[in-house]
Image 1 (cartoon, rainbow, N blue to C red):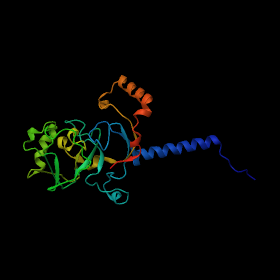
Image 2 (cartoon, rainbow, N blue to C red):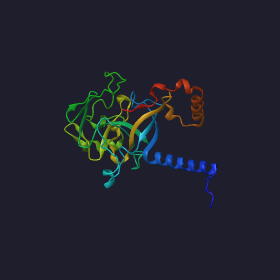
Image 3 (cartoon, rainbow, N blue to C red):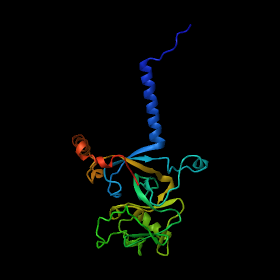
Image 4 (cartoon, one colour):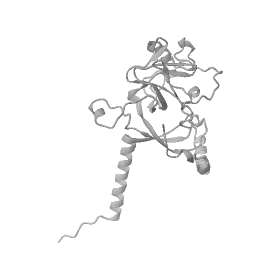
Length: 255
């Protein structure tokens, strides 16, 4: 009689490790993605140094029959999106880095901003999540949008300044098909659709699920890319992990 086959402990360990790696790669490729907030454009909803888990399935762009089979859902107003900035620079058509903004207008909507109040399809919308860190008396580009004169839109890209007039109807911006008008919650500190245009549907990467870790971070960290800056950040993390971790934000659902 042939004795029963027994796998060695080493083989069990190796197989378990391989399966774990495969599942991790599958999960980070198709299901979840880790993302760090680099700027304050979404404060106070998302803070600099918040680390997110992004659901890549919810808003995945999948034309054809798969969109009726997999658990996708339609993007709604007020949804927070992670997407790729449409242009790497103002001369190329390649998408750039990831942005996080909130949906204000969906395809077909008419959007207008007057004295910082947002109107969609002629009605003022409630925005309890919005932060106004600068007094209304200090007029800023984007406080009124679309501008009466596109040339007055300080901070806008040349590409958007050329394209913007074609989307304006009776002082309102009309959102075209498969596009979204997005803005940051920290309204006067956000470089968003007012300044560079629409977020294309095919560049939406996903929907933030939760904050799995939050660490107090320098506001200009994303601008500091030198080796000495990286070493400082590592040292800061090691020394101040307990005191600078925002424990109350851990596992907070993003809304």
